[in-house]
Every structure is written in structure tokens, then in C-alpha cells.
Amino acid sequence: MQNAHSIANFSGPRYVCSLPDGGFAVSEECGGVKLYDSSHKLVSSISSKYGHRFGNPAGLCADKEGNMIVADEQHQKVHLFPRNGSPICLVSKGLLRPTGVACAPDGSLFVTDSGDNDIKVFKYPGSEWFWRTGSENFDWFGEPANTTSG
Image 1 (spheres, rainbow, N blue to C red):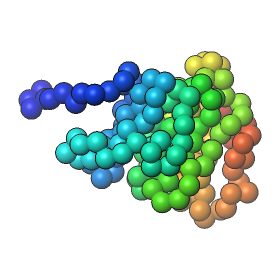
Image 2: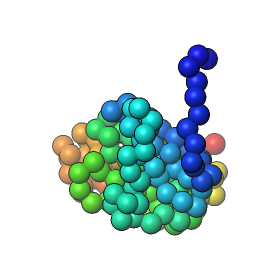
Image 3: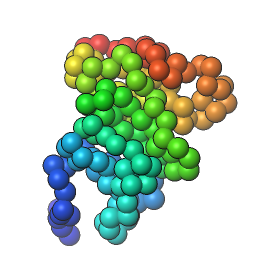
Image 4: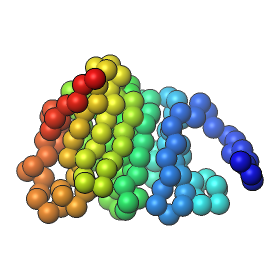
């Protein structure tokens, strides 16, 4: 690869995801989630922007609107951090050790749970599907819509 460079000053970097605006986000072990712009400059952290305290942030992803979704291993939860508005706890039950998250264009939210050795699939409330059908189709704090075990 050409033009590679290093970005320093992390405290146990774990997961990274790109953002729609060209920036990226990084989760730090037993720390927080830092947000960077397209020139690789630190913009803020989720903790400072939203006043949220993580136990141990792990996997993270961003949807096409730039909303962040973060799995917290220690607290056994998955949170949505919208670009505008307050954080939302998407999943607070049924997870033993959420480590990774990915959102799909169809509105699915995939959560890897290394405690259960499976992948849980939810309908994601940031998706167009959610806004068309309303929150009554999403169990905010309950079990996933379906589970894929391997």
C-alpha cells in the first residue's frame, strides 16, 4: 500500500468503522468511542458528545445517515447514537457478550454474541423500514426477531 500513515494516541484501540462523511470511529478497550473527520483529526468522542459512559465498547458501525451503533460488552447492551437527538438503548436483554455489530441496507442489525456463540438479527430502528412501519414492530428491549446459530 502507498501513502500509509499511523494515527496515534489511542488507549487499546479495538474496532474501527468508516463514516458516510469520510471520517471514521474507533472503540477503545474499557474506554470510549472516538470520532474522526476525513483528514484523520479527532472531532469528539461519544462520551463527550452524548454524556454516555461505556463499560467496554466493542464493535461499532454507522448507517448511511451517519448514526452510530455501538456494542458494549461489559454492560451487555447495544446503543444507537443518532446524529441528532439522544442515545437510544436498542438491545438490553438477551445478550451475554455483544462484540460486533453491522447494519444492512434492508434495515437488519446483526449482533455477534461471543457469549452465546451466535449472531442475533434485529430490525434496526434507524432504517427506512422502521420509520415506515413504526416502533410497534421492534421489541426495543426484548429478544431478537430471529437468531442464526452456527
